[in-house]
Image (tube, rainbow, N blue to C red; front, side):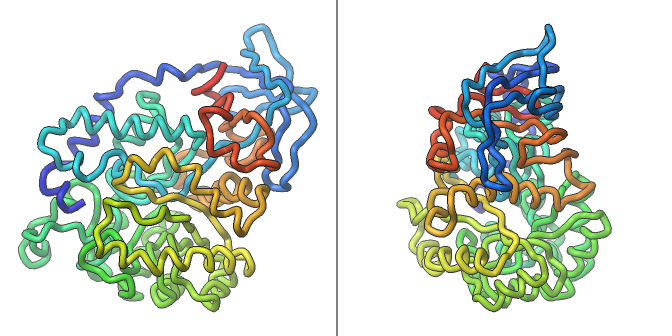
Length: 446
């Protein structure tokens, strides 16, 4: 990221998304009413597949299921042919803008803003066509892309935006280039701050201001950095970031806006401090111990965990070394979290490696070691929807997600086969998703 920010102004680049992809997605088919006839509804909460039935969608919600779901002359009919109707998939840890191009493409002086905008918009569209109808963006300049999606100018999932990450000096979100000096001592904001990627905030007052700036722009939740990371240069994994008072400042400002703080952290020390500060969600946590997992369960704190892709050839030796213990700890954390009843969510966290985006849904497959197909399906739909709902009135979309029920938002997938019997079906959307619908609009199928 530091090399990229040396060469490009992200605000202008991301704003070009709207211009580069100004036409609505050609695949989208809008209708005031759609009847999905002869479908089997997947109850993800109870892990059951229902008998053949009809589902009526009016505008963007499910209006009726069963005998009361009837077509009129103007209703579009989708023949289900006994296939499975399930909620859209949800990924609660993405970086839509920074996942669109590799670093080499981002800092290449020959890469134009239109090319970058098109890449970000296409990445969002591809994500929707993989069946992900809602995501939580956990850091970066996201607001222009979100506005383009919500206005129908770009096809993409619903976005719960965090905005710029909030980090202490020398923290996981300190993206300064080596030549950039501290704003506090030298009076100039870092390029990454100017472009909406991060806030470098030290002390209670600065953390309050940074949090409120994100909320002013429309953040649905706040992301702060509570410990070291693998992709940052200045902070070892074991370090704890932000004092208790600084963390509480973010929590105070967010709770005044009736939303919550999520914290990037791996270690028990960092996570225990976050819990004490009132943080509602931990991102990552692969170095947790069982005692801290139990504390999270007792306090009702969410764990947003990932199955990280193993090391890739493009990773530096330093990053590989940082990742070793994190990769090793993944299995233990999933098992302990399940055992002790922690509120669990799932995400991918693909960043600067766009070639991995197509593997997004396949990252659920390692969960088969610890969860049944029914539990996995509930996790990537209903559970993730409950975490999105934690934003309360700051949620950008009001309505229920993650279920196929009357009154819920019509984010739906029509699946060839039964995912309860074969969870691998959801990892091949091109073959197995006959219809992809978001908000009552069909983006794939007829």
